Length: 337
Length: 240
Image 1 (cartoon, each protein chain N blue to C red):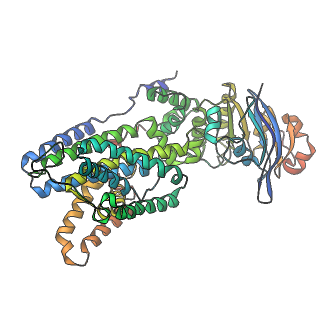
Image 2 (tube, one colour):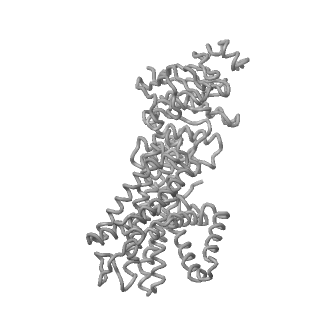
Image 3 (cartoon, rainbow over the protein chains, first blue to last red):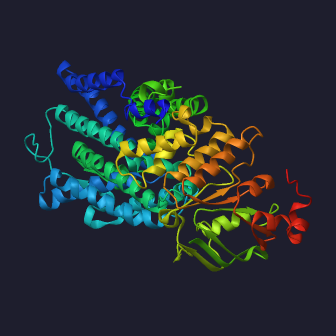
């Protein structure tokens, strides 16, 4: 065996950058410690929204960033998750912790059902089809009496804070920690996925499906797998959101805006990169909240104009997202030239 | 032993017969060169054999197993690798990642898959470029990448579409050497080539196509002297 090959083989599998490990560890500690500094309700809400949207965008990143399928109806899985916990809690008193996995399974089931025919389509056709699927869910739930039709579901409030019922009235801090834990778990799941055999194969499907076929990859099956994983990551956010606001209706949880915002966050942060959704959510959600607060009342939709302008600038000057500002050697494997 | 047997393979696109009753056999451990002018149906033949395009009729056997009508991933899983005329690297992934995707077929363990990929990359003489993105590689290097990636699935039969096409003259000898090295490693090769000198040098047998039809099949010497081949394609052959 020649020397160059020996050197190549001796390289570590993942050139783990100590700076990144230190950064991640510090960030996690900081995020856990943050409520101890007495964050007010608004900031807690802001962080909760960042965590929630980062997970939702991470979900979208799996189907779009890893396997290259642009889904415009991903809000459907958010809605399924929201309705699953609320419905079972209202009707049968089942704790959201128990019904949440059920919502995840239902989302996965629907992803298979939708994915089998839809993922035969590609490119714009798939995007348009998923857009219509997303809208269909909203329309069906608006007319479905069993789940409250257009009025939606009102989750009965518990008299006290309850971990079992996942309701906290005195402070948002428990919600903060719950969303934070889901955010961290999702990050590591997607991080592991990106480094697994499945991750490699999904990227092959994204980059060139024809070439992937020549490497024994059943492209359709892998697209469905990505779609199911993606849907199953999305659903628990719907469940937690429903418990957070306690009122859900089709216009709120099946809204097309949900599908669009997760797309924008991922594109802004960097599509196909595990850090992209986090960066995108950390920037876009505060901009969205602040512009709504300070400019939303002007009546001229100035907040939305500003929001759109920022996105246009990013798309023109940084099409790979804000992650492209970070040198690749830091976040990815070190390139040895 | 016959590794590949093609019988009466046909495919029409509208009124054009891209492949018209093509039949040939390939012995294990040999190189079959496929020649023909542009539009002769060479790449279509590869697409029909590997399942990328559905044939209208015919029969394709790989080690006496009928693979006609199977999907490309199933055919590749049986041990039929291929490269493409229009290169299809996974552009946003490194050379190592490209080859690892192939080596995952036989190696489930990520470290073993990586080591196997590195050995193949070393075999195609690109070890120093392993961490380069595919899009950063030259055409010749991307040809090697495709060969390495196809080799990673440990094919018994490798179909290579114009390996030396579109590369500079300096790169060609290295690629030819690589094809010979591949044959010596035990892989049976079917290769489409426009460079007749190369085909005559490396092939055990040659299949000549013209306007979708097989016009000759035989040893390079037989093909060289075949009047129909000379008329339709070769013109004057430079034996040097």
